[in-house]
Image 1 (cartoon, one colour):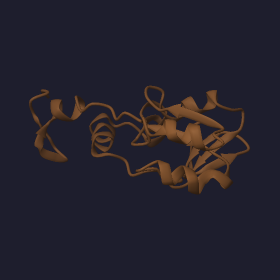
Image 2 (image 1 turned 180 degrees about the horizontal axis):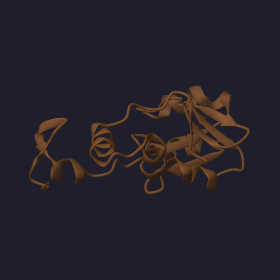
Image 3 (image 1 turned 90 degrees about the vertical axis):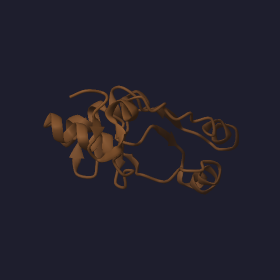
Image 4 (image 1 turned 135 degrees about the vertical axis):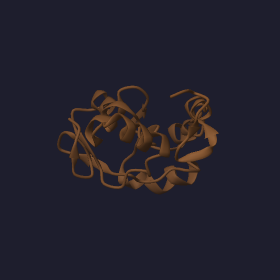
Length: 134
């Protein structure tokens, strides 16, 4: 396997092209910080969604996670990695989490161009649908 090989889910691109795609810059989050009652922010990089445990002793339930990008599906398949480990290791398409109370959701979504509600605060643990991460 070489970085020059075609990326199977998107053969017009090489594996290297996909792996070297720059990370998104989340500058619009600052607008939410200035205009909303923000209870937490997390840039989800290495460590996956388990990083959220640093925000609060409360839990997080992702009932509507964002679609998983082809790169992560491919890594899962070729590596034989289970879903729980993938969400513990990678962001799986959810690169930034903004925690706001229900009363601030509409305002936050007006600011965040590609934002959407993916879940809610819960009593404990970190869940993605039926998968318990912590």
